[in-house]
Length: 191
Image (tube, rainbow, N blue to C red):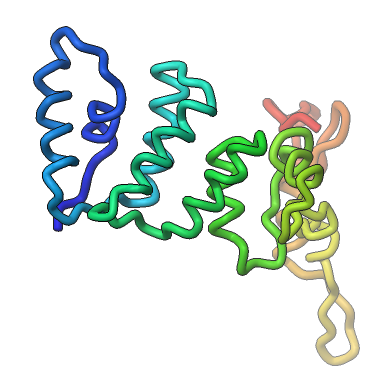
């Protein structure tokens, strides 16, 4: 069994002609000769990006390409069920990469995304399960939560690591903690 790379599949499906014509003929012969072939899920993802991003194909054309590829009995597509689920959600308007990530995460409690209007919003409108949600801000480890005190012989003292982190990385509007020679830090992370 041979594994197909994205460029072979792109040449098979996109007929650009000209200098690429010879490659298109070789790609067609390779795919259509009937020998067992393997297509990795990453190749499927990259092929969608090439068809949409490089060649400007609309989602309907991308769906037709994948349906034709899935119909080839001698082509083994990695995680075929996930690719088919992603294709179904592409038909419904979800971005293919998001749809494939979701289909590959079905065993999880919930895929997490900052993309509230895109991935999470569309997934919510489609009532996809598991639901896509934003990460919990409370899950972040705060500096002050690491400043738990330790007790040795009844004397309470803060965690040395927490104090050091607080002194070296805390900054407030226009000032900093620790010894700064009276100057604010050279750069701070935007809030």
